[in-house]
Image 1 (cartoon, rainbow, N blue to C red):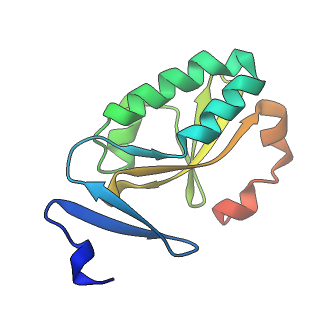
Image 2 (cartoon, one colour):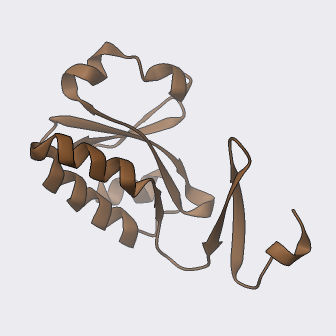
Amino acid sequence: MTGDRRAAGLHYVNFPGDIWFALCEHGSVRVISHKAIREVAAKKKEAAQPLDDWYRVVRRADWGNLAELRSDYPHADLVGSCIVFNIGGNKFRLITKVAFRHRIVYTRFILSHKEYDKGRWKDDCNC
């Protein structure tokens, strides 16, 4: 990465596919991708409010590790390299990868309980 990208107060994070994200130094968590959450909420109306609630909590969070995350979500589980959130009274599973150091939550899958139980998501989480 060239020096001109290293502006004061910014960190750059490389995700697979050479995609770089600039992160401002502040306490909030960046959720990638909010668009995916909105798309699922539009298709599964019963998930819309719980997903929005989750998103709002996460955006304000300042988690440095799994223990701090569990202060907001005590039933979040580390499964392989992913963190799984129970959403909507255990009706949905939000599967994420969390980069605590960079304050990024990367949305991988939003599944119904039935879809989750099929386990097709596990390869992405190194299970």
